[in-house]
Image 1 (tube, rainbow, N blue to C red):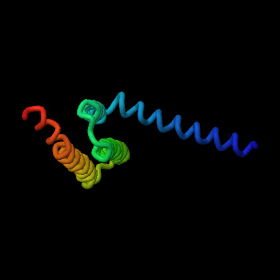
Image 2 (cartoon, rainbow, N blue to C red):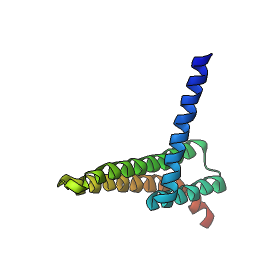
Image 3 (cartoon, helix red, strand yellow):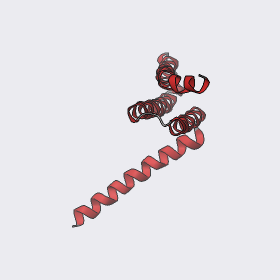
Image 4 (tube, rainbow, N blue to C red):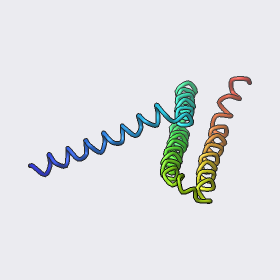
Length: 126
Protein backbone atom coordinates (compact mmCIF):
# COMPACT_ATOMS: atom_id res chain seq x y z
CA UNK A 1 0.00 0.00 0.00
CA UNK A 2 2.84 2.38 0.80
CA UNK A 3 4.43 1.70 -2.60
CA UNK A 4 1.20 2.74 -4.32
CA UNK A 5 1.07 6.03 -2.43
CA UNK A 6 4.72 6.67 -3.22
CA UNK A 7 4.04 5.91 -6.86
CA UNK A 8 1.10 8.31 -6.91
CA UNK A 9 3.22 11.04 -5.29
CA UNK A 10 5.91 10.53 -7.92
CA UNK A 11 3.34 10.66 -10.72
CA UNK A 12 1.83 13.85 -9.27
CA UNK A 13 5.30 15.38 -9.00
CA UNK A 14 6.01 14.45 -12.64
CA UNK A 15 2.77 16.07 -13.75
CA UNK A 16 3.57 19.13 -11.67
CA UNK A 17 6.96 19.48 -13.35
CA UNK A 18 5.42 18.98 -16.80
CA UNK A 19 2.75 21.62 -16.18
CA UNK A 20 5.40 24.02 -14.84
CA UNK A 21 7.35 23.57 -18.08
CA UNK A 22 4.21 24.07 -20.17
CA UNK A 23 3.31 27.18 -18.16
CA UNK A 24 6.79 28.57 -18.81
CA UNK A 25 6.52 27.93 -22.54
CA UNK A 26 3.05 29.50 -22.70
CA UNK A 27 4.07 32.58 -20.75
CA UNK A 28 7.64 33.18 -21.97
CA UNK A 29 8.12 31.70 -25.44
CA UNK A 30 6.70 33.95 -28.18
CA UNK A 31 6.92 31.35 -30.95
CA UNK A 32 5.17 28.75 -28.80
CA UNK A 33 2.44 31.28 -28.02
CA UNK A 34 1.96 32.00 -31.74
CA UNK A 35 1.81 28.28 -32.51
CA UNK A 36 -0.81 27.74 -29.78
CA UNK A 37 -2.94 30.55 -31.26
CA UNK A 38 -2.67 28.92 -34.69
CA UNK A 39 -3.57 25.56 -33.11
CA UNK A 40 -6.70 27.04 -31.53
CA UNK A 41 -7.64 28.53 -34.93
CA UNK A 42 -7.18 25.15 -36.64
CA UNK A 43 -9.20 23.38 -33.95
CA UNK A 44 -11.96 25.97 -34.44
CA UNK A 45 -11.94 25.25 -38.20
CA UNK A 46 -12.13 21.52 -37.47
CA UNK A 47 -15.30 22.13 -35.47
CA UNK A 48 -16.83 24.62 -37.93
CA UNK A 49 -16.31 22.45 -41.01
CA UNK A 50 -17.12 19.19 -39.21
CA UNK A 51 -13.94 17.63 -40.55
CA UNK A 52 -13.89 13.85 -41.00
CA UNK A 53 -12.46 12.09 -37.98
CA UNK A 54 -9.41 10.72 -39.84
CA UNK A 55 -8.62 14.23 -41.12
CA UNK A 56 -9.02 15.64 -37.61
CA UNK A 57 -6.59 13.02 -36.29
CA UNK A 58 -4.03 14.07 -38.90
CA UNK A 59 -4.53 17.76 -38.10
CA UNK A 60 -4.23 17.16 -34.35
CA UNK A 61 -1.07 15.13 -35.00
CA UNK A 62 0.40 17.99 -37.02
CA UNK A 63 -0.48 20.48 -34.28
CA UNK A 64 1.15 18.33 -31.61
CA UNK A 65 4.17 17.69 -33.82
CA UNK A 66 4.85 21.41 -34.28
CA UNK A 67 4.35 22.16 -30.57
CA UNK A 68 6.63 19.31 -29.49
CA UNK A 69 9.33 20.32 -31.97
CA UNK A 70 9.10 23.93 -30.74
CA UNK A 71 9.53 22.76 -27.13
CA UNK A 72 12.55 20.67 -28.17
CA UNK A 73 13.98 23.70 -29.95
CA UNK A 74 13.57 25.77 -26.78
CA UNK A 75 15.26 23.09 -24.70
CA UNK A 76 18.23 22.82 -27.06
CA UNK A 77 18.55 26.62 -27.16
CA UNK A 78 18.65 26.80 -23.36
CA UNK A 79 21.25 24.05 -23.11
CA UNK A 80 23.39 25.63 -25.82
CA UNK A 81 23.07 29.04 -24.11
CA UNK A 82 24.79 27.53 -21.09
CA UNK A 83 27.85 27.07 -23.32
CA UNK A 84 27.74 30.69 -24.50
CA UNK A 85 30.46 32.01 -22.18
CA UNK A 86 32.88 29.64 -23.92
CA UNK A 87 31.35 30.27 -27.34
CA UNK A 88 31.91 27.26 -29.49
CA UNK A 89 31.66 27.67 -33.27
CA UNK A 90 28.83 25.12 -33.34
CA UNK A 91 26.58 27.03 -30.91
CA UNK A 92 25.09 29.23 -33.63
CA UNK A 93 24.90 26.31 -36.07
CA UNK A 94 23.02 24.15 -33.54
CA UNK A 95 20.50 26.93 -32.88
CA UNK A 96 20.05 27.59 -36.59
CA UNK A 97 19.55 23.91 -37.34
CA UNK A 98 16.95 23.54 -34.58
CA UNK A 99 15.14 26.58 -35.96
CA UNK A 100 15.23 24.88 -39.37
CA UNK A 101 13.63 21.76 -37.85
CA UNK A 102 10.76 23.89 -36.52
CA UNK A 103 10.43 25.71 -39.84
CA UNK A 104 10.28 22.49 -41.87
CA UNK A 105 7.75 21.04 -39.42
CA UNK A 106 5.58 24.14 -39.63
CA UNK A 107 5.69 24.24 -43.43
CA UNK A 108 4.90 20.54 -43.73
CA UNK A 109 2.03 20.89 -41.26
CA UNK A 110 0.70 23.92 -43.13
CA UNK A 111 0.82 21.96 -46.40
CA UNK A 112 -1.11 19.09 -44.81
CA UNK A 113 -3.65 21.58 -43.45
CA UNK A 114 -4.09 23.21 -46.84
CA UNK A 115 -4.61 19.83 -48.51
CA UNK A 116 -7.22 18.84 -45.92
CA UNK A 117 -9.06 22.18 -45.70
CA UNK A 118 -9.00 23.06 -49.42
CA UNK A 119 -12.14 21.07 -50.35
CA UNK A 120 -14.04 22.51 -47.40
CA UNK A 121 -13.16 26.12 -48.29
CA UNK A 122 -13.79 25.45 -51.99
CA UNK A 123 -17.31 24.22 -51.19
CA UNK A 124 -18.03 27.60 -49.54
CA UNK A 125 -17.46 29.42 -52.82
CA UNK A 126 -19.06 26.99 -55.27
